[in-house]
Length: 60
Image (cartoon, rainbow, N blue to C red; front, top):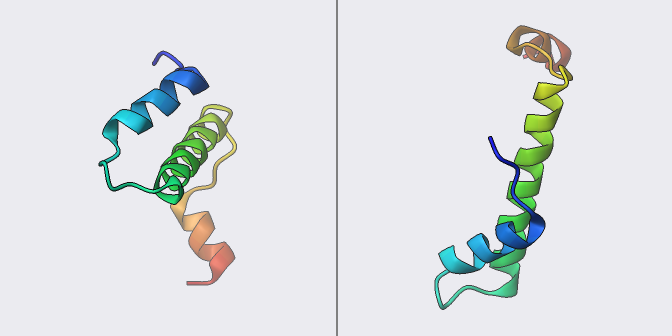
């Protein structure tokens, strides 16, 4: 996967937003993409827990 630059991410978000979108809508979209990128990076680095471990930690 080729990493996108921040500028290209922002352009992509702007292109996909409807004309009625607010700054809050755009900021939320950027926030979600940032969190997904951080999660993928954590997974690539092995910083994850199994589903079973997560359930055990949460005692579900």
